[in-house]
Amino acid sequence: MALHVVGNVCVDDTFYVERLPRPGETVNAVATARGVGGKGANQAVAASRIGAEVVFRAALGDDADAMFLRAALGAELPLDGLVMLDTPTDRSTILVNREGENVVVTAAASATAFDPTGQLSWPGLGDHLLMQGNLRADVTRVCLEKAKDGGAITILNPSPLDGGPVPEADVIIVNAGEAEAMAGCADPAEAARRLSRGGTASVVVTLGADGAICLDRGAKDVERIAAPAVAAVDSSGAGDVFAGVLSGCLTRGVPLSIATTVGVRAASIAVTRRGTLAACPSRTEINALITGISRDLS
Image (cartoon, rainbow, N blue to C red; front, side, top):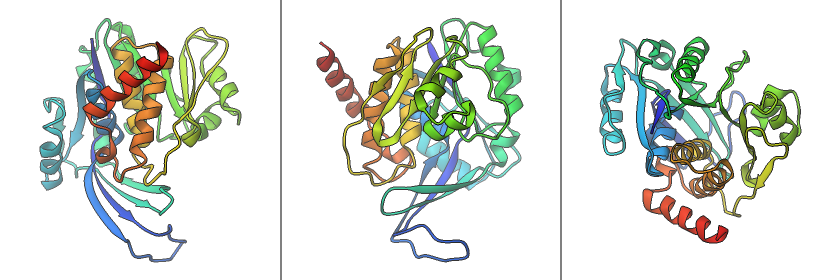
């Protein structure tokens, strides 16, 4: 069984500041970094490090940034799912303050132009498809529908939200703010129930330092997963680490509650490091997490 990740990839330029600037204000960075980003790429690599067989599809431009991304991703993923478009390669600028909070702005010409729907003969019976909110809404919807028709299990992390209807998926992964916006309910547990479409979908809501809750398909009650106490440095890649690790676990047949636990602990490592993809735990670290969780459950 393979995990097909269809999404975006971009260059992340991160500026670390003492505090985020007010409107019209300039602040000096205390440090900078450049690396691989984009929710699709981040989640694909995180899933690969859990041991899932990952097929990653995204669009690049024909420029130096594309060469940089190919070189960086080549050690992590097969690159034959990357296509070249007549657009600039996507880029994000990230500001991170000393508390680890961040703001992000992205130029997404390649993701906006990317339409792989004509290639959707590949997610088959037993495969999984993971998507985010970076592609056009119509492309995301068609990809999910065709994958479902082919017998694949669909997973959607619909960030960033565009304000429109959210496509249906077998598993929905959202943070607390997204859950409230989508369900019209401030209580994460009740929001999960509403998003489950009467129990036909599984829902996971991340709660930052408070961990996550998960509602398995058909279950009546949510399960709460606590997060380890850590000193956060940079939260900009944590959500992607969580979604990728959880999806990789599901592809390998791990139950949702355990997959959520592994995702929470992996994200707790990520927030203690700077960067987006650079903060993702290594294969060795993730294997140690799984071993520790298995020991705790035995």
